[in-house]
Length: 455
Image (cartoon, one colour):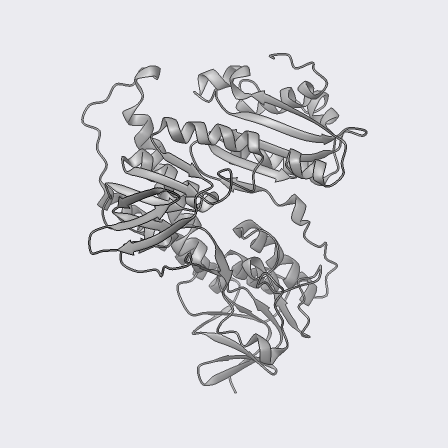
């Protein structure tokens, strides 16, 4: 028998390391089990690598197309190898930082694959005892029917880690991950086709916001195809061919970004008495407890959106529950979505259609970012803020932003919604600095009652 702990966290991604650090802060002897790199998939293969490449795409695009703001540069080129080198440098810095946090908080990092056993977690031939276990193993990419990953058929990590810039690429799935890949590579100069089986790109977002992004994608040369079921995929040594509807296409790489499944294969859930719901997720209560005593689950393993910031907060809730603290369950309706395309898309709460389907009587208003002075200054005129509010009391039911800094701007609207604020406070009580893009938020609120100043 190996060491004994108050809590063992299986997985060191954003949810897992937040859970472990919070548990240690609360005086619990804590261990983290990780079979791969510290920091999990988010830091090593997903969120951080994606945003590193997206940042370069932003700067590269601005450098090449800066004539309108007085920047004329010759000989601009992309060193794709150096970009991938920087991606690796960023990754190593952040994963090393997580390992340093574990050391600072006296958290033991155990290398290997963990599976639940009676009284703890087994890693290899050793069992580590603990009365409480937090499962934080995240999710894995799923191929579409008739395909498997390998060679010219890539998952999202395969797309972000390509050794050289491809001439052409097709991306299957226009949710956040697929749209980010399309946005980055199109600005790098790759010919990109973005295919979505549902009627709109970013299917989880408000349709008005999705339309703005689709127009920008088309302006950047991305071929956007909705209502498209990809089939007859054939991968060769140097290309991939596929069909959709009556059309067929051949590209250098086919990227499948259509879905992910909970990574539970190695955990031994059945023997531990932990069941899955119809979506393959682990049901939990407001403290992240599963049906099995002493076992908690967080992040992509549990119902709700597969987002790193959801996992982080759930990890804190689980750790505090184990420590005996009073916890506030995660409000899944208050979890913001953030898509780092160009322009960015961010939202919280219900779309206008969802609010109406849920039986709310709603008011909604849109305000273009070009209506405020900063929209012209920062070349961010085409985006917008859209608010969906309760018609009787004005409570914010949903907020949706598309624009170059939407993912930073959404935090204010998350706070207002979570504090049960109304559009009235946004319209007349919260003062925004000038000149900033954030001034579009009170203008959208004023537009609900048709008194936006810059309309």
